[in-house]
Length: 197
Image 1 (cartoon, rainbow, N blue to C red):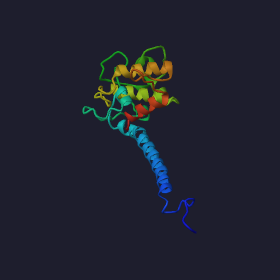
Image 2 (image 1 turned 45 degrees about the vertical axis):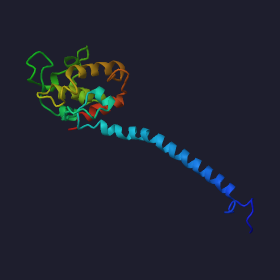
Image 3 (image 1 turned 180 degrees about the vertical axis):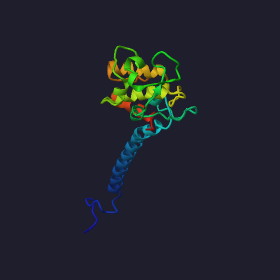
Image 4 (image 1 turned 60 degrees about the vertical axis):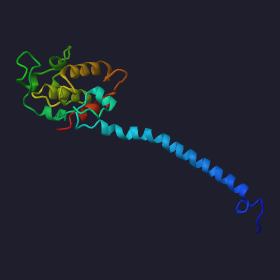
């Protein structure tokens, strides 16, 4: 076979070789640019669970922003619904009486803890089928315990009570302005701040 202008393998034909190289270089540039622009998105998705680690207590708004740089973060030692369902006494103060006493689980209702007209026993909520409501009740007991198992810098009693009221009314929760949590997102947050059984 002789070298000819129509043969692209002809090393002597510089015009054709440079145009093929230019097309390959342009393709490589597009591929690299696509990879570089996708990297920050991938890093955001991958880093979210790390920033919202359950070992560190964060407020709902801190959890939304993924604020892992807060040097004042405390460790959570909150207990789960199954733990509280198995206890013979709970933190008191739901009904009139001293705030740091204990209360029998059987006598405490949703009304006692959160207000409103619902007289469902909290024990029934803890063992019921609504996992989000059970986690909110566990959060309430974790906050009411003396000393609290969830620091008030992360979640205080008024916040937990508001969380219950809003979730019962809307089946969601607004952790901060412009943010809205579905039941699954609220459950994720509550499970992360209650890592112990």
